Image (tube, rainbow, N blue to C red; front, side, top):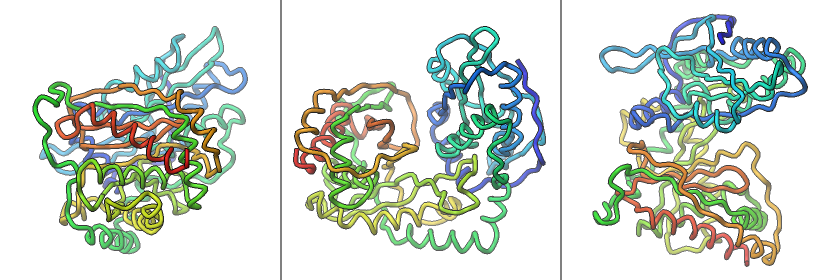
Length: 419
């Protein structure tokens, strides 16, 4: 079916820093750039009809400008511009299929960035009522936290007919204008200074023997589901008075050192950049890479965690940066990333060694993804409770070493927790 919608305004302008960053990643990954699609499934509260649900969807698109924004791609291959439409018509799929299967299906094809709306929607119906809304986002329109804002607003629209009476969030066009202005340029220069202080280094820079490579596809993802790792991370975080995200980032950096034989580990964590009031509730692509540096591969995790606090703060300061500055300068590109995608991070909590050891038999490892191209050689993702995945180019890290890396991450943190 077709759902018409209308917003407050339209216009065109340059991309924001976050949009520029993800556009570069998309271009480097194409034609496998469906890799960046992601989505959410909303269980519809109460009993809602098709008309009520589509009215809430129309209001959602009217509220958040990024969901009405497409790209103008220049013929000469230069930088695209964003085009915000005042209104339009969204195609919506009606289905009785399993919502998670629909989510996988709708994520599996790349977006048409010029002509397709950056949101795909399916409504799961049971007779006259809608039971679930499946939302798939183009990464140019939203990051993970932005998608969660959209889902919360849609739920409130379904419950009350309004998104909790909050003032409208800033538009990506507003943010792009601020970033181009004097204050935005000052922020960009401060971030650039952090990047420029880091010597150039690629972490995974040695081709593996031909017999160890996966020829086609060459990019694979290994996924570790480990309750023991989750418990151990919380215990280590409690002992060091830090977050589980910092513990996992630091442990990843330590193992990257071991894996590459380098003394300095440079990892690019994805930072949400929602520390400012105008970006806190934006449904847009605000997240960017920061630069996290740890020296001393021979140090234990205790010592590395002591240094990780200041290293993390520098990474956060460096993440809200202008990618065009990066393109003009000689900034480090280690091709090694870390992305904690959890919406709600479980806090630090003491756990007994016995409790952690008892969870070890539940560990499983799977291979959920493979494709030919990716903009990065090594990327750790954290999600769920607790799933850690490693996506890597097998010409630089073969599958057997990917599996070993994840199991070593579990072992390192379990041992650090005293189990």
